[in-house]
Length: 577
Image (cartoon, one colour):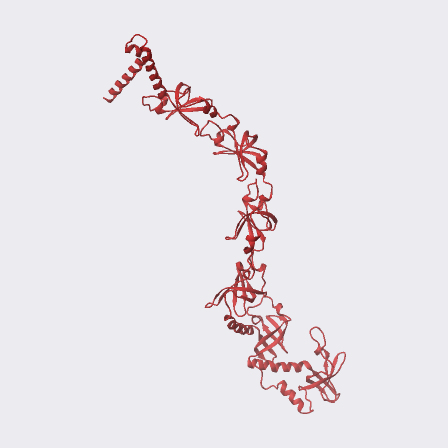
């Protein structure tokens, strides 16, 4: 603290007024009487004027601030009695006056005001009437990264260390701010309430948000509450020191935690979406980000739409949106769907272009025969290339009228050129159906016209299976004689009775046009023919002489069948015994 033995500026000045005895080191009042090129002449009531260098009246910009008639205290530095020369100093008088104020402020704990002159090693140099030092740790509430931002500004400081003898003064701005913060905090806490819009200053910025100084208490402004649009980092819209208006979203009185919102101070653009946009509207926007499944388009600030990869091209199989668009690109899209509840807009890029599927449907009406190259072969069918990027499907069911359980891989290979018939083109679902069997007439059509239930057919055995025989009924059409319809006798193996190539006669039991199935019976036909033979015999017997029953059996071949049946029964009995 200040040394009490030294005389104050006030004491020195009062002593100078008590008489006209001038002593070096005194403070006297002077009046400017003349200003020369290098000197200011001062009348102090001495036999000659005193002199002060003009440099003492120049400011940092070199401008002179003194005029004739000005009165102010001056310090008596040197008196040459022989020559009548008196050297004075305005600055030293001011310094002594400043020291008195500094000492008083240090004793009372009051504040001093000063101008930051420059940044020096470890802190700032400040003019408070004398040069003082502010350590970097005492400049602000948090140690600043750039001390240069304070140079040239005036602040209030607290004297924390003083040595007048050595001329050392150490100041603190931080203690002033802390005290102001405490006072502001107490007054602020009583006014905070949710929903209120308050003024603040950006104090610090992080990856997840920014801390806002509300004047005594800090609030957190999360990045998700900064903008209705998308932000990658808070620094895109905020800088430390920025003044800002925010809304109090949540306030915890006990923990003194405040959650703030910036976007909530502005209208939510989604409130107007349902009035501004409709399905099928064309909109323009900028690509702001890409994902594996699509591209996000900013239609307006805070309103985004998604173009799914499936809506980017009519014909190409887009694996990633970067194949079509890039971030920052301006695009035109069509609104496909609006979900205001979940804040989603589905957009389509391909819908702004001519639909090649509609062109295809006009170019190739149903029934048109075309040739194309096999692009792919699967278990369920064959894909045939017709136009650039547009393939048609020949489903396995449209390969043959008659073949069952077809394996397309056994019939076609990639690169084959085949002829097909256009069955159907569905532009809405982007489906192109082709057929091979339609190149020929459907053999079933003749069956439907000529074959009826009860008819007798004659055909070759085309296949023998465990459950029966397949008989050729017409070209490319087969009927099935089930094992139970082959003979009256029970048989476990149709192959033991007939072989492929045998000619057989059978009766049509039923025709299933929907499933394209014909059920045949040899047993039924045999029984019917036997019945007809007996009936005929009985009819003919009335006209002819009576014959023995044995003659009848012999004539119709029934005797041999009877012997065979009896012999079979005898063998069965022996086997059982």
